[in-house]
Amino acid sequence: MQEEISRRPKVYIVIYSLYHHIYKLSLAIREELEVCGIDAQIFQVPETLSDQVLEKMHAPAKPDVPVIQVNQLAEPDGLMFGIPTRFGIFPAQMKEGRIEYFFRSHKKDVYRLLDASGQLWAKGSLAGKFAATFFSTASQHGGQETTALHAVTYFAHHGLLYVPFGFANASLFDNNDVVGGSAYGAGTITNGDGSRQPSEQELDIAKNQAANFAKILNQYHRGKLAIAVTTSTNATTTTTTTSAAPAPAPVVNLSEEGTKNDAAMNASAPGDTATGTVVAPAAVAATAGTAAAVASKKNPASIGADSDASIRSLKAVSTQNQINNNRDMPLITTTSPEGLTEPQRTNETIEGADSDIRRTNVGTGSAATAPPGQRSSAQVKPKKKKKFLFCCGGGDLD
Image (cartoon, rainbow, N blue to C red; front, side, top):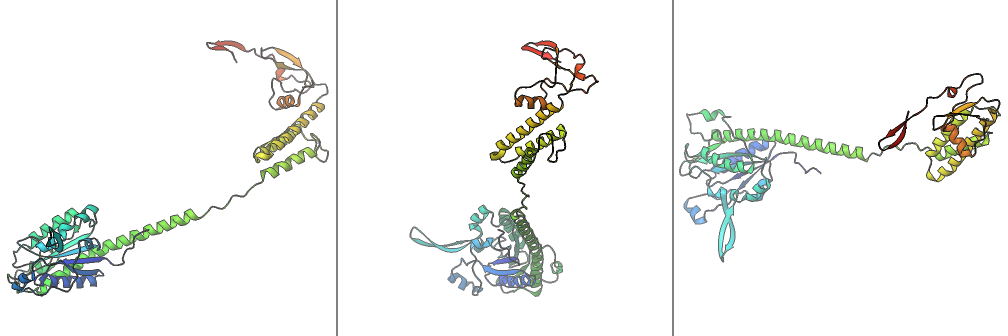
């Protein structure tokens, strides 16, 4: 059974945003993803800083989006990470967040996201999924590219397929204005105190990146659906072909057919048909042979009876043949095992019906009868067999 595949690709946008710069970029990205036919959802990682510290930093309230759990990273087809830089690398909140646990009766708050993804790595749960990044820094040289490079190490270990943005937007070449973003993804410049918010150019770059990411994801998803449909169709065809039973072959009652043939042969006089017409012995023998062949294919219970009937028919044919040919038959010769010839008449009585059958069909030592006035091939002086002694015993060599 093929697993259920959604008709629309799914993307999770995972962010950490202290002053909502990354959050505003994520809203623009989600909007464009949905326009392109992607089911997009924004998640955030929990804050590790205490409320007292956040108050002193004049940080606004957190966005109203759900907090992602590490096992949820395996659910979507693609992941887009919104990462503010800390000294040119990941912030601690993206690597590990806050959860509660007890150690030696002391309450500890620890939450891990990427650093807690070892189980997903061991199972290969993220392999083959697509990933992208976007950033925020205080200055134009605050480390947007180096932060992306640190993210790539996570992607490589998990087998995620990293999709860079490239220079797909012309605003990245504009040196007249302050513009965030790079070949690794969209970005914004915030100033050191967080007073600058994303510009229209930067939001446009973010939408451009989302559209490119959606295009790749949609192409992949269409191929995935096509493979699933083809596999399902082939499986259904195979099941239908296997379940269709072949038409039964016509059954021939060989036993009944053989019984009819035996009855027809026994009803007539040996060598004659039912109307009294003399039938050639060869034809009668052929008929008897056919009956025997049919009898060999019958079921075991009737083989014995049919064989007896066939033997009686052969005996009758042999007897009639002896009567018809008992008129001035010439002498013929037979060859003895010693290579000598001796005369013998064909009308001599052969004791035992079984010997007569063997004489007729096999011809044990008896030659064929030649017509009157013609020499039989058996009357020609036969070539004597030469004796030849093998090393392991004697034997005849023709």
